Image (cartoon, rainbow, N blue to C red; front, side, top):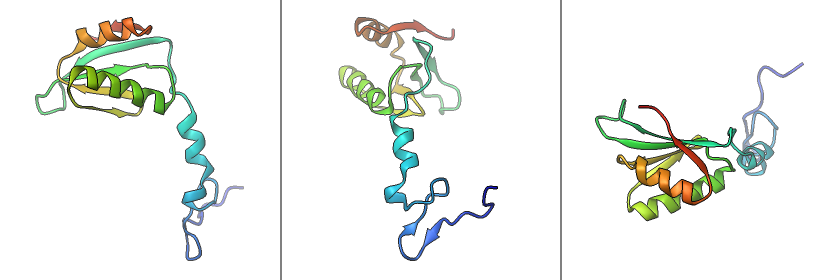
Amino acid sequence: MRNSNPVVYSTESGRICPKCSRPIGLCICKSAKADQPFPSDGIVRVRREKQGRGGKEVTSIRGVPGTKDEIQKLAAEIKKKLGTGGTVRDGVIEIQGDRVDFVLSFLTNSGYKAKRDGG
């Protein structure tokens, strides 16, 4: 039976991970999670989004195969080529502005199977 009130803080070691019951600095849950690749069907989907962003356009890239670090490196490379900002959230790369055509050609030239998503 699982403990319904796990220890989350100890005066000896500080914060405790509720899943593995180790100090946060020695937690094995987060390191195992960071190395896992995001689920992908092999097709990278690129779309322009505007809704919920105060009228600003964002190019979102979903389905990139790889781990969090690999996706971060790809995002940095795309942002550097474009000279624009962006971020990575939950395995989705968001690039500022409507840059769908450039991103599609860049990903295709980099060896990814990419297609336009949405309208």
